[in-house]
Each structure stands twice: as C-alpha cells, then as structure tokens.
Length: 211
Image (cartoon, rainbow, N blue to C red):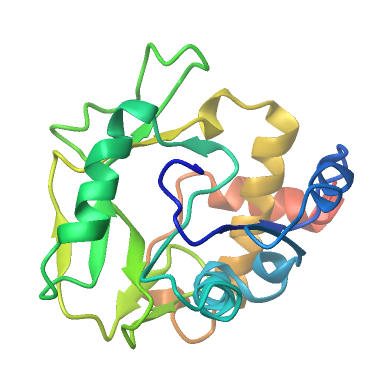
C-alpha cells in the first residue's frame, strides 16, 4: 500500500496473537503507525470507522483521504493507478468513493460468490478527511452527513478472502456480529438478521465470544 498511501499508513490491531504485534511494533515509524485497540469488539464497526478517521487526521495532518481495508482484504496492484487518479483528481462534489468488493471463495483468486458486474457489493471505504460525515450502526455500518458517493464498476476492487479463511476465524466473526447486532439498541432494528445469525447467537451463549 506504500505505492498509494502518500501521507502514511496506520494499522489498527484488534487483538492478534500470531506475532503481528511484535512484527509491526518493531517497524513503526513516522510513516507506519501501529495501534492496538479492540474498539470493534467494544463499540462496533461504525465507531471503529469514525475512530480511524480521527486517528488519520491526528497522525497524518497533511492527508486528504482515508482509505481502510480489513486484514482479510486486498487491493490488487493493477488497480493502484486508478486509485491514485481518483484520489488526486476526483471533483469536490464527491467526498466518498465506494469500491466494488469481490468475495473470494479461494485464496487462488479464481472464484467469487457473485459477479461484481451484477452484484458489485459496493463498500464506502474511501472518504475525504475534511468531510463532516459519520458512520453509524454497530454492524453493517452506514454513512450519513456526506455530500455524494462516487460508485463505479471501474473503481478499484476490494478482494475479500473471509470465505477462504479457517473455520475458527469465521466462527469468531459470526459470534462477534451476533453480539454487535444484539447490542445495537439504536440502529439494530434497521437491518435484518443474517441467515446464520441465530446459529452464532447460540454459539455465543454457549462458548462466549472467543470460544
């Protein structure tokens, strides 16, 4: 990501135990920042996105945009040129860029659950830091207070590898999402249950969040 992140990169670790913390803490510098914070578990995805935008403004005051991707997501190098072009030249009428997300069924990049041209699964991941926009909802976060979203099939793609990760990690995410939906008293009724949410809710009751 150094090829497209002019101001810097911040990694927010929500609780890894595989040596990630030690690896990045030894390499952190003025360009690469490393923060340990389980804010998603405590407050949900909307709050985590708002906190990341605030961190970006604090750590990189010269930055104009904030782009976030999760640990199980990638943007291919072939899309870097388009990403830089949008970052540098998109007109001010837009303060959000939505990227199509391809849900990969294999780590070999050969299969997706849906064709992005039919179901692009747009993700509003790139936002201007001078915009007053906010994310709401603990789960399936939504934007408000923005001007306009630039969403095109030609935008860079997010390649999502959640479905090709191990079952233990997928079960944790399922339990976490069930927990956050149940706790979202303000917005929880505004989005439906996932088709496996009842299953993970029972797993959460029996095994706890971390199993």
